[in-house]
Image (cartoon, rainbow, N blue to C red; front, side):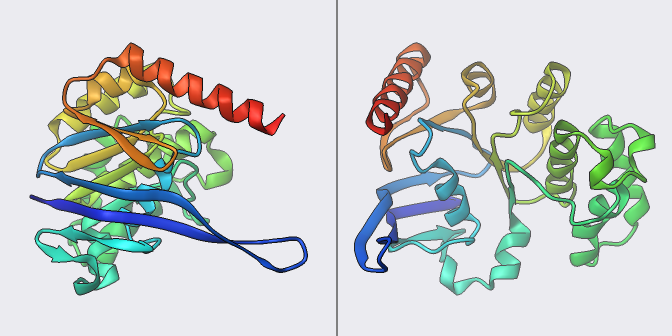
Length: 245
């Protein structure tokens, strides 16, 4: 298998207003699953279920409190962080271009990997992702939220990662780009895990679904009752909202 998550938990320490410890708060609890090469996995669940936390663990932006994660048979701790992140790429829900132009943002991951023919690769990416040429010299401040998200996805794909982690990839995309992304992800040779609240898109994107509920894995299936999943998530979010009221 490509990825293996074994009995993984993740907890954060809590501090009172007076500075005293309130103990640990578990965001994830005893997650175990495997992902084979080429799989497309949708990760769903109510807000606060731990979906983004799981992606962060898979990119080593955080470390498990318990358990371990393996990539290609090696535990994460055995792989240099930079090398791991060159193979497992994370595209955040609110991406940043760090002051770069679009052209620079697309070139940057290729430069880090010492890949030659940057212009050719950038041009191929621009064509595949249908990026307007007049975007290339724009900065972050000159792009809409959806445009920045599209460029961040293109930046993640351009270096052909082994694993692509997407956090709410179509949250700010229009319908045409959401459809195009489905087509592109079906063609590229990489394993993709995507957190999403868009169930229709998730159903069309995924080979398999992981459903998280309050930090626990409650569904791991290639055959899903999407109406049932939607109802369960809506019920949890309603209960959580009532607790805050």
